[in-house]
Picture 1: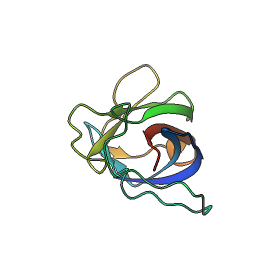
Picture 2: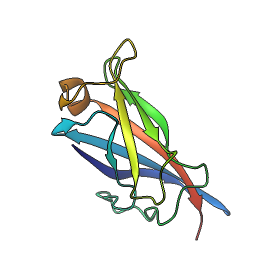
Picture 3: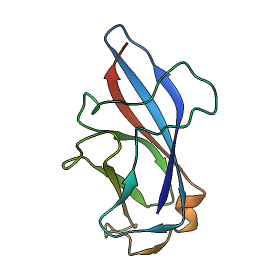
Picture 4: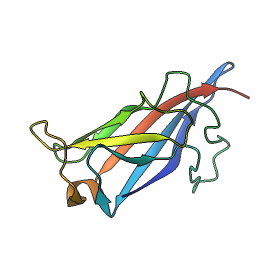
Length: 121
């Protein structure tokens, strides 16, 4: 149940900034969605963009790009009360939610990028 989030790029604007967040999956999946903490974002490239300290303007992150062999992800935004309280559901090819267990190799070796919009500071 570990989803690491890192800032891969951002598009600054006068009023709003879009963050592009890469996800890395390790460990096991929990039915209903794994924790997705957007407040603790790694910044391995030293970009000027900052993490999220409030709920994104668009209500939550959206899927920008995924290459995970037919699997797909869906952020759960309905119950989020802070950037640290999102969940991410994972679905298998065919549309059923992934069962509890170790993440498949398609996810641990694949690419998922979310986009979230925040106010520029």
